[in-house]
Amino acid sequence: MVKFGAPVFPSTEKNAGFDPELYAAKHKEKGFTSAYVPRIDINDKELIKAFRETFKREGIVLAEAGYWENIMDMNRAERTYHRNRMLETFFLAEELGAGCAVNIFGSYCHGNGNSRHCAMNFSNDAFADAVDMARYFIDTVKPKTAYFTYEIFPINFIDSVESMLKLVKAVDRERFGVHFDLVNMINSPRTYFGHIDIINETVKLLGGHIVSAHLKDIKLKEPAISVILEEVPPGSGIINFGVLMKALNGLPRDTPALIEHLPDEAAYDAAASYIRKEAEKAGVRI
Image 1 (cartoon, rainbow, N blue to C red):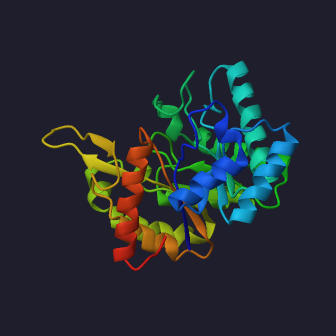
Image 2: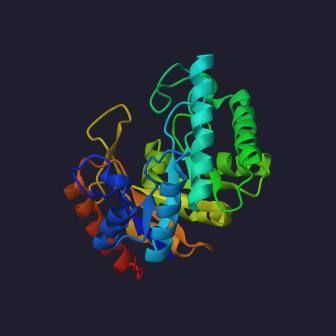
């Protein structure tokens, strides 16, 4: 079963997102059954307990706790800081009963690891570092419920089904999961037009390891001699959401699928409506 979700906007008041009752109520209003974990202080045990109990009572899955900073930063102090915050995020996911903690592997640069490219990102050393870091986080937290995941991402070696499968085998930890982001696996016209094959291959080879997924769309810019791929709102690009949602629905565990990267509540409402309609056409109720 797909646990469908998206960011919600419970109030314009400061810290309203940290009120578990308001946060859960907004998800119920939108018909969502999964949620992003808000940034909560790992030391605020009462708030963590309130979120865990409220969302369990309401039947809404806390899907993923994300820390989107560069854990491979070439500045030693920054790298240490971000790895410690990533560790806290994983502890938070475990205490909340969330499905996973997630980050991208990062980039061998100083600063933003989400958008700065480096040849070393595709090296054997990068693979070894990814294995070591995943084991470190998992062996330190010793989770019983949450998984640690790297989101599949186009600017480092974890950019394909094959590379993720290789990583899963190398990490060799029960609580290492797969975060499936289809759009992040589309990095050429070949993968763009063949994205349904990627869906099928991912489910076939990694289905038992997938613990969360992101939903967005992508469009190839034309006319253009160079390959320019642009992330766009669902329904504006090539992604066949009927096929994608049917594939997610067939996974062996209930899987959160979360919309991301849209500018405001109206855009998320429109995207959710479109995805629901496409899923329904495919015989999937979300």
